[in-house]
Amino acid sequence: MQYKYYTLPLNSISLIKNKPIDTCSIQDSIANYIHLIMTTRFGECSFDSFFGCAIWNVDFNNIASDNKLRVIISDSLVKSIKQYEKRLMGIEIQVDIEQEEIHNKQKKSRIKKRVYVLIKGVVRKTNEDFNYNEYFYIAPLSY
Image (cartoon, rainbow, N blue to C red; front, side, top):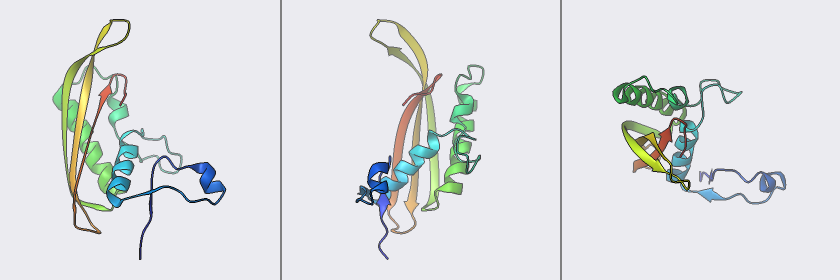
């Protein structure tokens, strides 16, 4: 059976008008779903209050050390991805946190924490290696 994987965000107008919707590969679909998990705070989805990631819980947390933040984010991602992304197996997650100076147009500088996430695994259906990386800044969250 051939599966269709849809791109995010969904084009709701095409969906309502019963027109074709953009599709993508299983790898891209998994990457989109992981991104959705990472950028959703717990309780944001009314259908499942456990969907999401703890990244939002540590945003603005200036007290915790980088090591503690790394463990909190990594543990939360492992738990959420194992629970919600069943198309992956053998999941390994690496989280690195660095301080980075951000310059804006007004020539003001801010120090933000840059969180780099690397996710490796194997796609169950195809047995292909899966690699996904993304980085974002916390305090406040932006990507």
